[in-house]
Length: 303
Image 1: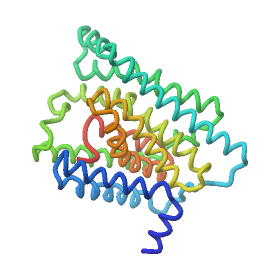
Image 2: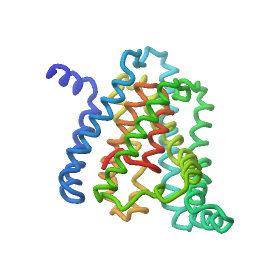
Image 3: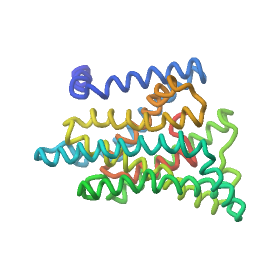
Image 4: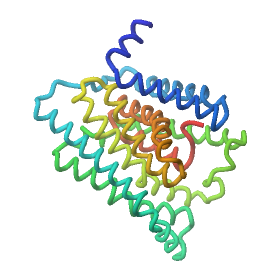
């Protein structure tokens, strides 16, 4: 076991430091911000998720980095960098320019005045931003670089969809436990009707579930893997970029000092590692999109 751990550190030099830093931030957040017992619980949850994903996908042939001609590797790298820049630029524009000017809150207010339920109006307004700014640019980049749908995880097996649903159910259960233990006051969907919850969840998938999984797992992780040569390296790099993607939201939405936000972004990278591992084992963005969507609308992934 020690030899395997040593090989992991040697072969994946980006992954190990990220795990250590994320664990350290998790522990410090538990001590100084939340409660000390949250850190070990979250690390145990991380192990549990990885174990469930590994068990559910055991016995299948994993996609390892293959020998590709230089022009294909250059294309992979170019697509990954292009999408990363587009995503980081778009989220900065949204949080530093668009939201301070009252959008999409004004759109949500108009939709609510037109008779839509509050939850649906809010999500629909968000989708009006995320589709043109986050989802469509990624799809256009994939098309321009002539990458096939399968290469960015747009295909899926039914059993992998079931895995995504199962992981989502774990998140809902965790959220209910957190509410029962007094860790959070309640969940929005607990006081909404089933049709409203269903429509809100569908809109949420277009707000962050599908756009982020396609960009950060399907494109950035998936296309960096053959270029970097080690799955762990591309997994770590894509998770760190995904963590940086959330920094503007933390600065503007949560009011955190700008020097603190990147550290919290690295804390969030822990989720990116789990989503990335799910993509690596299934080679599809859809199980992760289901799980990701549920974690931002119905449940939790970590406490």
